[in-house]
Structure formats: structure tokens, C-alpha cells
Length: 540
Ligand code: ADP
Image 1 (tube, rainbow, N blue to C red):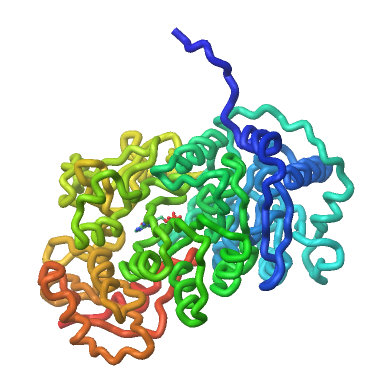
Image 2 (cartoon, protein in one colour; image 1 turned 90 degrees about the horizontal axis):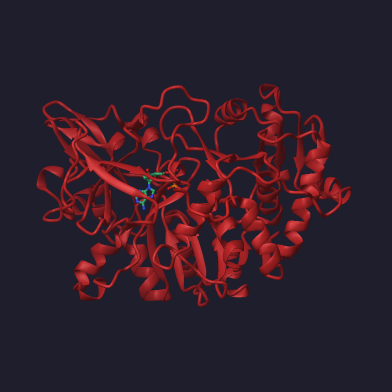
């Protein structure tokens, strides 16, 4: 028997319509230079999205076509998000920090028809335009006066295109399962792979993450999106904030500028923000140097990589901000688990509380998890046994865009490539990535656990562990670390830190201090580059 409720599809158009009707006056603020901001509202932004949808139709864009953006976090990128997805086209957000060969690969693989670009990225596209022949033209995100001189062919100006169009558009009724956007994973290994989201997955994800015990906020919050809009929809914020009715603050191109971030937080009274550990560290470093504060900020979400203990301590002790860890993947539409302290947290002692916040947290609604051994046999949820982490759910990628082999999909579950244990209450703790494991004497060693332990050392600011070749054991852990500039500890001092904290045979055999570690385009330590550089390192 079928239910007798209305068949109204869960599409991004419903988010837009909701915000247009009920939150039209709520502001969107974007940093345009270090001192000044641009101010608009949801109402105005959606009128401009309608103008853009008319402009795209006039350019001959068709539903299902991929249209790319190389853009920072601001109101124009926000308008494009809605104009493309709600008119049935596919928003392909591109990470401008990728290497040129990767950019060429993904633009061609996605068969992008047009590219919206911030003027900053004109030189980047000029360099590769001969290698992306399917692209029909480029739309610069500025007005005529700001349009740079360029050799890019068929270039249009965003503001001129909009000014020629009317501000209403007949948004089509879309199937909730239809594709709306495409994001390529950062590709720490191999070629980038495209995750093709559906309208439904975006809406369900936005609803689940917005629960209070996930990483919810309210219409009284002011929300800062430091995660780039080119990376998994800034973890969903450009959809969640209009859905909830929160004022949205975008840092423009200043995602990595502690001074601009501090300024925005205090001036715009930002109370909720999301970012990766590197960005939060950068903000804290700026606050320490300048003596400035971030008083309005109440809650900050950190994810995308393991977060050092020192960040949790600094946020809570010095700035009175609750730092909450989340774990996710591009393939999950971003968030999979969030570590909000539950009712039992208060009963833990201080040491237990400290180690508890370092875990990745419990699955949000709609995400199922399991761990298995190498043979695929499910492992117990005892908070100890580590295995391959699998997920399934309505927001989880079923297959990659235009890719033949889907070896990550096993019996309807998605293999994350992360290694984790799961506690009886479902709390997930990532202990490693299967591609990063170190195999010593036939046994696995968790590089992440060693890194986490290294990061609890007060003088270590960044750490990576890779497997170095070893005559007897095959591989041994090799720690590559960045120390605080003024620190004079020796390698031996740092290695002694591990005594009693991890299994003795996990203790790194060697340590190399470097000024900085290499990072992937999304700001994570690039283990691939480290392995390429030091993987042949031989420990006797
Ligand atoms: P994102 O950076 O948004 O999480 P990616 O798809 O680029 O998405 O990377 C996903 C991978 O990042 C995960 O499979 C995991 O290895 C790692 N990761 C994400 N969040 C965390 C976290 N909180 N702790 C440890 N690793 C994490």
C-alpha cells in the first residue's frame, strides 16, 4: 500500500524557494578586500540567480550540461550554485589549487561547457585553454571595468550578462534523483574521481547535518564558511544557511588570512564557523601574535584531517570556543560523523574527556557504518578492534562519474579507505587510512595514531608518518615533523615522548625535522609526496 502524501521532490529549488519566501531579508556578507565587504540578501541573491538562469538559457546551456566554477567564497559563487542546479544544469566546482594537468584532466573528463572564473584565475586558464577544447567560453566574475585583458577566447562578463536579463525565471520541476553538481576528490592517489550529487542527496545531507546533535545552528547564528565553496559545497553551508535562515558570511579569497578572518568574526559577529585544522591553526597563530580575540564565535567545526590536541585546548582554554570534530568525505556529500559531546560526556574524567574529543564522532542520521577485516568479515564494535571502514546511505556515492571500475563499492557499501574502530555507541575513531598503513613484520602499524601522539607534544606543530624500508621488518615508521621555531629539542627528546604512550614497536625508528610539510590542494599533508621523497629511505 502506498502512503497518501504529496509527491513534492526534495530539490535545491525547494531550499531556494523556502529562503526566498521566509528569509529574504537575511544578509549575505562577502569580503571583497581585506578592509571592505559586499552586502546582499537572500532575496536579492535569488533574483540575480534568476537573471543568471535566463542568461545561461540565452547562451544555449541545456539541462544536464556541466558548467564549471573556479571561484572563491562569495555572493556570486552562491548565486551560481542556485542558478545552475535549480535550472537543471550541473554545477562543477573546481579546486583552483590543483596542478595544471589535473585541471585539464577534470575539465575534459567532466566535459565542461562553460567556466565561471574569478579574475585571479585568468592566467591559470590561459595556460591550459588549448588543452580544454570542449569549453565554449569563459564568464569572469566581475563587472566590465574589472575584466582583465586576456587571451581567453569567448569571454563574457558576469555583471553584464546579468544586467541584460529579467529577474524572474520559470524554475523547472526537477526529479529529486536528478544530478545537480559534480566535485572531484582531491586525488591523493591516482587521477581525481568525480562524485555526482543528486538534488535529494544534497537536501537530505543538509537536513541531517543541521540537527542540533550533528553540527546544527539556528537562524540566530551568523555563519562563516571558511571551507572553500569549491570543496564539497563548503560542507553544505551554502544550502544549510538559507534553509535555516542564518546570516551567511563569506571570506572571499581570504580563506587563509588570519587577520581577515578575525576581522570578519568580530565585525559581523560570527557565532558558527567550519574549517580544516590547518586554517584553524593559522587563525590561532594570528590571534597569538596580535593579541586579538574572536569573542562572538561560540562553536567551530573542524574536519577533513586529524586535529591536534593543542587546537582543542587553545580554542576552549584561551578563546572559550567549543571546537567540534567531524569526519567526512567528498563521497559522502561531506559529513559522515560528528563528535558532539553526548549525555555521558560529563561523567568522564578530564583525561577521558581529552581523548574523547579527538575521536571522529557518531554517524549523522542517514549514514550507516561498519568495519571489516581484510576478508570482509564484520568486526565488533568494541572501541578497540580496527578494520576497514565502510559506509552506506542516501548521501553516499554509489559510483564515480563516467568511470568503469567501482572497486570501492562492495555489496552495497562504500569502502572509505579509512581504518577505524567503532565503540558500542557507534562512536567512530579513525586510526589510519588503508593506503597509509605501515606493515612491519607482517603486522599493521597505524601511522595516524603515531601522528596523533606526536601532535600532543607541545613543540610539534605538524607531523606525518610514512613507512621507511627496513631490512628486517620490511617497513618501519619514519616521522617527519615540523617543530616550533624557537624549540631546541633533539630528535631523541621527541622520540622519548612516545615511551609508554604507544606500543613500543610502533615507536618511530627515525625522525626528520623539516621547515614545512608538503600539502595537497585541499590543505592536507600529502603523504604521496612524502612517500615519493622519503619512501626509499632505509632504516637499518
Ligand atoms: P574532506 O577533506 O572534506 O573530509 P576528502 O574527500 O578530501 O574530504 O577527504 C576525505 C578523507 O579525509 C577521509 O577519508 C579521511 O581519510 C580524511 N578525514 C576527513 N575528516 C577527518 C578527520 N576528522 N580525522 C581524520 N581524517 C579525516
